[in-house]
Length: 378
Image 1 (cartoon, helix red, strand yellow):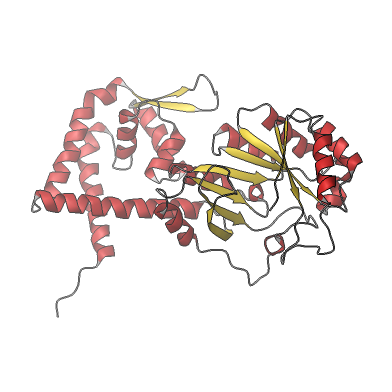
Image 2 (cartoon, helix red, strand yellow):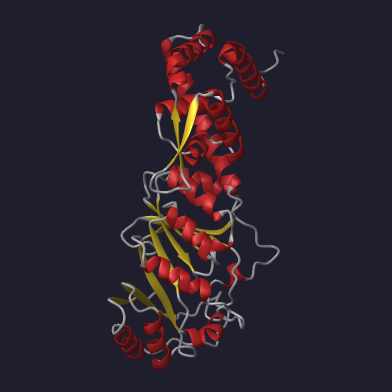
């Protein structure tokens, strides 16, 4: 019986043979196979950032940095500082690249003609689409794996989590607070038998519904306590989604970076109560409010869309604390009041929602300090 082709081995042969060809043909230019796609990407997108090359090529940042520095040393690439953001670098090709670019394209063209010489036009088109599909799947899966961000719940369709957007909702596990009224006990206290959703399943869903959905709502737990949130947001943005992020504001540095890199479109900042009542309301005695205050100021002074979300609990909120809260957040544009609703996964089932007349009174108090106060009933 004839042995079936080994796809993995064939792919390895193609890769190694391609590398040997390019390294040989480029040696007179002092270039290597690893540098070639990066150089071409810069040439075809002058001013591109290093981070963009990482995203487009599916590289790790260290690999791109190393090769860009080598190209700079060889005189093929110049690295300029962005005039608006001194930390950002723009990459441009030099006269040396432009002198040899036709030769480089010719080397690439000759290799393509060699490996496809026995294929007709229709076969080449099918192969190209097939290979591109495999590459896209591999790259997106690798990108998602690199995020090291685990989700424990996926709501496949929501009409309410991200207003005016048809979205899905993703929930991370773990939180640095223990709000007694939290309705996600299963995400705050992760049991050893609670497993995250397989990364590939998240990937497949986001990839497969790009045309159906236009938004992603991300909550928790507390999403910003996970370092991988940054890479995940970059990945989700590369798919074209708009993103709403729900956070408690206690990870200011990470929030600032997310806004600086424009990785989200909307922030919902969860404020628990007035400062003097915060510890009791959030279930943590030594809570530090400095990062929350910095996050609040950051949003007030930014151009990003945001709201302040307050869950109203009879045992924690009263007219005095609401007035103090109003003074604390004075100047924000939009506050959402959500009366507490008990459910199966609430941490403390002894709590109650204030009656609706009281909710209306709270809204009236906050309207002294805030432009718009909305009551959202589940």
